[in-house]
Length: 380
Image 1 (spheres, rainbow, N blue to C red):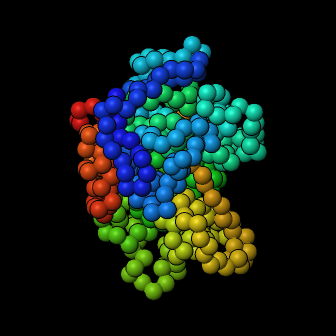
Image 2 (image 1 turned 135 degrees about the vertical axis):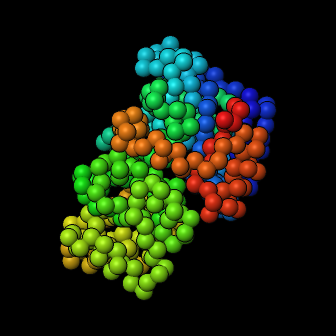
Image 3 (image 1 turned 60 degrees about the horizontal axis):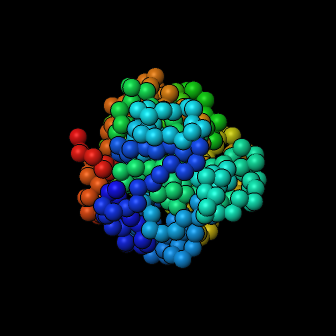
């Protein structure tokens, strides 16, 4: 089949001889890919000089699947079911789906030929938090070959059906919006509450949509780049340029004087300044959620910025199937506008152009792009 194969840093190649995945287990589902979004994680795998982050390094194997490179990347995808294993009951050929892409302890049973089966469940998986699995992987990042290809085979329990009202391109956005949805859930967010989104990149914009799906009150997006502020404004957030004043934290808090700060703040940038702001700009008992993926290095932190007003700081790790289901329901019910969601899509490219017009376009012209979708079919 056609696909993009990841061999390592700065080495993704288009191929028309990628082995087509096959149904091997009773709970396997084979999907014909419609669209797959290029994620910031994909870009990091492509450019990170230290080698793969989630993908197994050359000469090693994925802890869940036992697979080795090269593999097809791509974990933000939608498609149509074309074949199912003998035990599958929740989807059938012809169903359109979004795929919840995590791979965790319970997925090992699908890979009896390549990975040991006597490892048991880690504590996170035992406690019902597979998104925090000690061996966490993803379809398209080592757990299985992913959505930058014509076909994907993955487990039934990762399939979330799409209603007729949600087109395939929006279906590929369910994954990034689910990242944001999980973060909003981690904030224990209540209808009418106020929220600060730090960063107007893809996940920051998805967080605006997820907050709207939770009936948020005032949403402010703090972002220094003009074009990203414009994107955030088009999605319905108030916008703020932190580079225009000496004390951005004070100005942000003053935007919600009735609460002495925001009920919740979401750091979608991952730099020390935004982490600090996510805490300082919340009001008493406010919740700061780190959504960004950081490098492996420490930063300075003032513990009393939490203690004085009994604030909370927490993290949010990817998503669960429940998040996918709730995002699909919010899109179906109009709590998240399809038109606003589509504004995140700034390009669609054919699979054969995925590296040059997709990956490199996002790396070299990220100021003009939010989400580029790759399709193995004709671009519409």
